[in-house]
Length: 216
Picture (cartoon, rainbow, N blue to C red):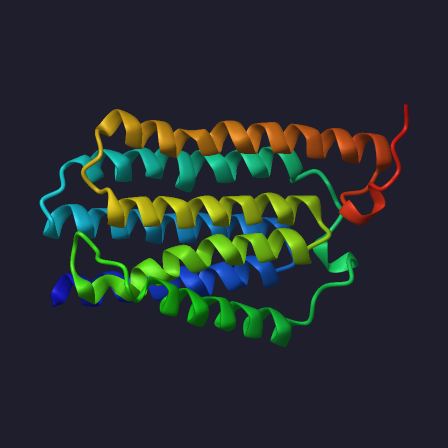
């Protein structure tokens, strides 16, 4: 009962930080929010590892601290902190609509996972719903945001959701697999950041809507 209460509440914080990540305007604030969300994800890993005696998850959690809490935010900051263009300059989806869509996604995901048999415990169904919802909230971020950097954060949200799902359904996978799954985010973010900087250098904008003309 104790572990499910802790994990379910931490999962609720993941939803809140996901919505904040979409809504905040400044890049530095977005990076802080993502780092905070990743830290919450790591805490869930540690709680599951402790209560379920899943020592493999300790390695996953430590790797996530290095990659998701430290390296990925640092890469994004170093890549874009000199770019003055703010997400506030774009026509954003209204805040009530973002919150409403996130709530609908969470509700639908809860009903989708209801029949699933968790290897942990039935009391963690809300966490599984959150893990699935994070994936689709990240997809919503990619679709609704015109800023390319925000779209990178959308990908990071999708990945956090995928990692949470894997930690719930396959928390005893070998450490090497866990490390590989966690570190792939670094390479993906590096590649996307490189192309985003090239786009900004050539077009002086991060507006994805302006990338509709191919030049040979």
